[in-house]
Structure formats: structure tokens, C-alpha cells
Image (cartoon, rainbow, N blue to C red; front, top):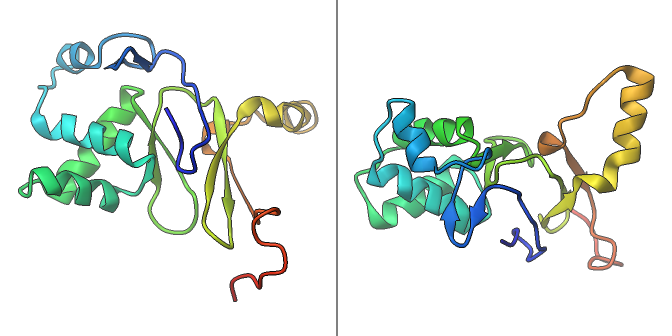
Length: 166
């Protein structure tokens, strides 16, 4: 599974041999039915859209779903994203102002960096911030949720000498 800029990521217990499972390793279709929900084509389309887009706002997911099913509306996409997040199949984060961004995955094993110049989003393994996280725990009695951490900055190698955004 690759992120928006091609960086490899591994999410344990989510995808095995092409089959999608819940964060706890169970079949997502069975988890839906066990909670009294039906498996609908719209739910499958929303999950497929998130998987295919990498990081996407609900509006981007809607646009992708409507390529196949033009009758699906925004409220269906929002409700489905909420349900899929509850099942651990997608996570949301905030990569800037505005709508949250959804990505496929069942664990908070990475955080995001966002270049303010080009908008590149990179997934960074949570282990890269272990020292920071431990420091917050020890000094502030604060437990971090790396899945919601986003660090904004500038890609150093790509934009040397270029003027940044105004």
C-alpha cells in the first residue's frame, strides 16, 4: 500500500492478500452485519474510493464514488466514512484548514508531514517521533495520538531557492 507520494506504509491487520479486514483482523463485511448494518454497494464504493485516493476529503471521495454511482449523495458518504472509521477501516486526520482527510488504515502507526509549498503529504512511521512522544508523556503527562499528528513545513530538497507561498 502506498501513500500519496509513493512512500511505502504498512498497516497491520488491515489488508491481507487483497482482502480487507477490520483493525482487529476480522472481516469487515461480517463486522458490519454483526452491528446490524447491511453491506451495500455504496459502502463498498466509499471504501474503494478511500483506498484508491490515498488521502482524500469527503468531497473527493464523493466525486470518485459518483463516477460509478451518480445517485450517491454527500450525506451517504459522510455517514459511511463515520461507520468505516468506527470499524477501523479508515482514519481521519487534518492536513490543513477545512475538511478532514481520510485515509485507509486501521492503526495509528504513522503521522503526516505536509509541505506548505507544494502540498506533498508524506506518511512517517510513528517510531520517528518516539522521543518526542515519550518526552510529552514524561513531562506533560500527555499521551499522543500519532494518527492525528500533522507536521507542517517545507520539503528541503525540492524547493531550494524557490519563493514560498505568499
